[in-house]
Amino acid sequence: MTLGSRRLVAEFLEASASKAPDKIALVAGAERLSYADLDARANRLARALRARGVTRGERVLIQGDNQLDTAVALFATLKCDAIFSVVNPQVKADKLAYMLDDAGARALIAEANVAPTWLDAYARCVAKGGSALRSVMVLGTRPEAVARAVDAGRSAGLPEVVSLDAAAAEQEARALARHGIDLDTAAIIYTSGSTGEPKGAMLSHRNVDFASWSVTALLENTADEVILGVVPVSFNYGLYQLLMSVRLGARLVLERSFAFPVQILQRCAAEGVTGFPGVPTMFATLGALGEVPAAPLESVRYVTSTAASLLPKHVAAARRWFPAAKVFSMYGLTECKRVSYLPPAALDARVDSVGVPIPGTEFWVERPDGGRAGPDEAGELVVRGAHIMQGYWGKPELTAKFLRPGPTPGERVFYTGDLCRIDAEGYLYFIARLDEVIKTRGEKVAPREVEAALERIEGVRECAVIGVEDELLGTAVKAFLVLTDEAKGRYTARDVQLKAGAMLENYMVPKHIAFVDALPKTEMGKIVKKTLK
Image (cartoon, rainbow, N blue to C red; front, side):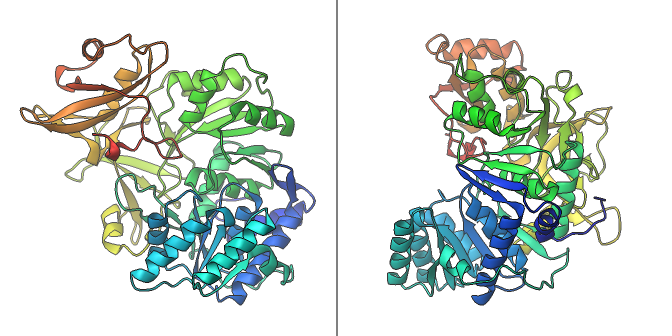
């Protein structure tokens, strides 16, 4: 597969189904789906969508978790030249209503067990002035639950509510003729909204093709991979596990959560998992496991992590459970999938770095005056590559803020809003979000630098640092600490300040310390600082 292939994303599935039709593509619980069956089911559902007016450029929201039907719905949407957006089934009604309205979704594919949410969301859209939604297809493993959801939707006055299985069963398994090209939008991926209203990043087929090529190239993936898919498909990281696996013709083992880690490890062993994509909270959970009825997994040849910093204790946990694996710490944003990765050989020597550019990507740090920063000089990270989003759906002014003219005529590069530095060897270091930098005592404080120091204190499990109003300083540094069970009651606020003072300049030492049982997080493990006070 060459860099210039320019494939449509639906062709990932069609190529793998043609090459190895009987190979197992997806595993979910007791269900196993071959590439031929996945392709056929997607074709049937694509025809059902087309029969309901879903054509080129229309938007389809898929409210599903890590299950076979979510994957089928995603590829079915692409097969009728439409645009998919996967939504977490646990999303609240107000946020779902925002997404339905913002995207102007023509169809919603949703689980029966969250019918109250999508019914409420539709009612909110109607109350605000109407909805573009014309069809809801209900999925679920229990026919009686699907039937109840269909009846409830019809009673609520939705234009059409049908069972997904019933609608697809009426169609033939032959692929639709397609007219899209690689510049068309394939997906709208909504940001978490942790810093405000969710934004829909538009990704073209070319964006997805390039990003999936780049990441699979650096991981040296092959069709023989068996990849764990426990990160929600509704998030960029989990979504790409599905897309990359199908592109490779590999097998993806879908799991709905990491709530029972021992069972997940045992499942990985039974399936012969070779790739373990995780997030720091998962590795923290693995690190806390004592002697359990699960053996280290020798079959896992690589581990990846993104979403937040991979701390040394997380790396240690990964190495304990996956002794033969290379550990790849990665950094990226929804708007461009991935920016960098830390080569496994550099992991111990450069633990604070987020690495070097992924294949086919360039980045630099820019000063406020527009000039490029020198080695170790802080500035805004700018990313260049074929994976840069097309823009934010329906938000041209916001798009113009983050996508600006690049080095070649007509090109746009991504101004990330991240404060970073690059050392003399080209390794990238994340400092802070520009809008999170704390100005106190006439100095600028990067929360991540303070957090890194606090995390080195024995007994601190995790922490978050923010700026709070202060009568004397204007803004003061405040730290929220979660301690291990063994460390609870061991430290006072003053103890923490003294230990932090041995590692930080005086103005960076938190004036306020709060000990908490847990920090608010997204499902991807990112701390939601806007809820801290």
